[in-house]
Length: 339
Image 1: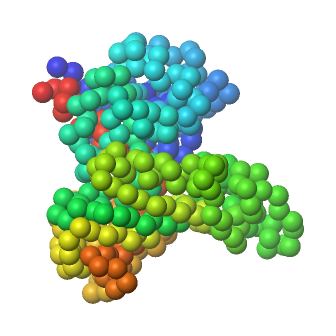
Image 2 (image 1 turned 30 degrees about the vertical axis):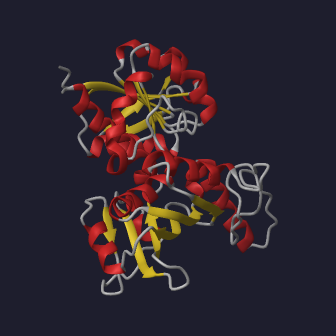
């Protein structure tokens, strides 16, 4: 039985990679050695791990045969190049990219929602970490679906720029400064100006007019919660640095009133329910930065449709929307390994 693990984080210089290192340290994950890995261009840069400093190693110069668990905090292109080969060497890979999420042989895991699917990791030694909006939505909707089956979901997301990386955060900052002194700005990481603006496009457009981000959320929820899930999604990029928010309209197969929904959600250790009776009546993006919970506010009846509720969900997209969920997967995985 292994009690401490050699762990690697690929993409350690990015937003999610750095956050993964922080979460691993905070939660005292049983680590023997930890390796911070990135591209050759980042080699010998430094990142923090608790009170230690790690030097970045190049992915092409890393011997993965001595590593048990690998977190990939990269885009799909990098994952496609490396993940399968590393998994075949015996490493257990937790991949944050979209590459494997809909692969029927790869479990797509939100521990609070579908932990039983984790056992399927043995098919490819790969576990997929869902989209940064899918995760908090699944955390909230799965316990409700367990009580009253969901018939249809209408989702509007309001996603911060950190979901597009550090360069995107810099772009919002620099554009904001430029507009204050009346300078023109040219979008670089986004299709439109992001400072003092928002736009309904995240990802590329599909032929039917939806975006790739919208398709991801809809299809991932179906895989995680159940094949009966029908979701229509609109994704909006907003000029916020960190944390995503989601407006949810959910129709159930039977009546579920506000009080019942609040009681169900309060049973989860991963959810904080805000109501008009709380001092904080609703959670905003800035309120939840650096936190690990999914915040649910403004739960109310939809009087235009039978058996339907409205909810407002907010979560730190870099933590529960990415890094924390990945580390929670790893924590559950080592329980399985030690059974």
